[in-house]
Length: 104
Figure: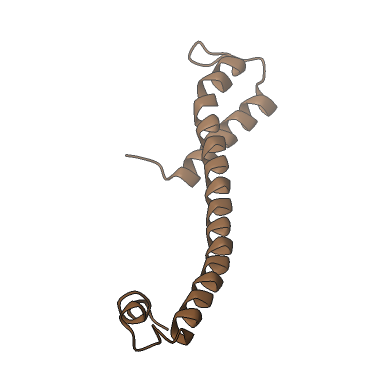
């Protein structure tokens, strides 16, 4: 049976802290505290990597949102220029095919 990630972190942290606080010099199952911590390190490293990736994702989403605002303003300028162009206009093929389908 698998342990939920939050519970797994709590368990391993609690086990390390209790061993370190209460029986720091004692070995269990032939392992010292240092060996135990070394065996748990991959879990801690994976969590640290996940935190970095989540921060990068948040930054990427923020960047996307900010650049989309700028791009939307540029598209609006072009839409308005096409509408105002005497050869195109808002009833013209260009406006209809490209701009009216995305909403205006």
